Length: 329
Ligand code: ACO
Image 1 (spheres, rainbow, N blue to C red):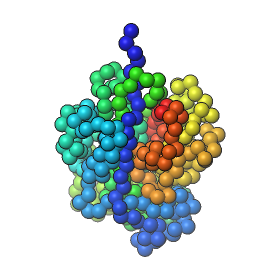
Image 2: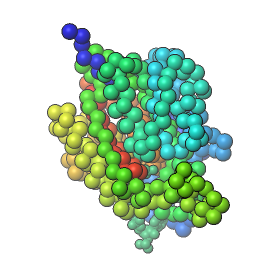
Image 3: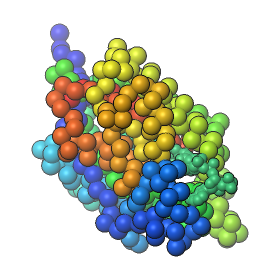
Image 4: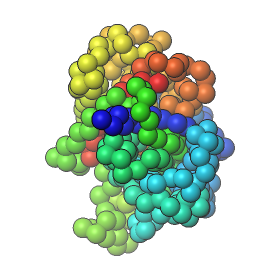
């Protein structure tokens, strides 16, 4: 009998544009303060992509690092799954653009539009393809340039978002390790709590909508906040149960970095001490789909993930979408 095929993460990489925008910079742009932003979100600074820097450029840098770590060349990648809500173009997909830049000429290509959950959706799809032996090596990316779709006059949203990219190569193995399970959820009935009202095929972009900033992010923050805590707890509990673990088995929680208060509430509900939670929101803000893979890469590079240890990844975003994954290293 052939051995079960598991999916393990063979390499990770991350990249953020060098330009830093601090809370003090924002004080000069909208009516806000460093104290308010830190106390309500945990964010001190975020990275901003320069004009002309596309998400595919950030994704390329993160992907190169992940491939090097996985000791693979781009032509060994069978599929590129790229999570983003800030694509280079509406058409074609950013995964296509990246494939060309990376010279991953044997890869099929697909964008995933699941907002902050995009990377976990990608891991789940990659894991499914590998388990049926369709692909051996899949590049999963989360990348955003949210700075380009944020209303810089709206203090409710512009202080929380940032730009960046994270990538992971997932590969087939018959060893007893890797992605033990994933769970994906969605609820389209709450779409209007966090959305961009116009600019799609339903309501294209006439000039009056641009004047009203309807093509930029609109968010009902406190409603989203409550849903995020509930959904991430639910996603974490589902996957812990599905994989036959208990919260005590989790060595490191890597949550979507939306707000330090959301992360702390989640840790409390899961009865996990903050020493087991990876946090970098102070340096990047909310980078949506890029948030979990950047945090994952940093945690690995800092030596916080040991062989045999268990990591729990959880995310929540616009849609609403949410999901979780458990990885044994
Ligand atoms: N500076 C100063 N005051 C502010 C700011 C600011 N930047 N922003 C809002 N305020 C004010 C509000 O106007 C309000 O004033 P009022 O009481 O006079 O009306 C007051 O602060 C409280 O506003 P709330 O919106 O209730 O503040 P809250 O504590 O909820 O924090 C925040 C807002 C940070 C947006 C929080 O709700 C949050 O993090 N929400 C979740 C975001 C999230 O998880 N998004 C999902 C993923 S993103 C994606 O999918 C792309």
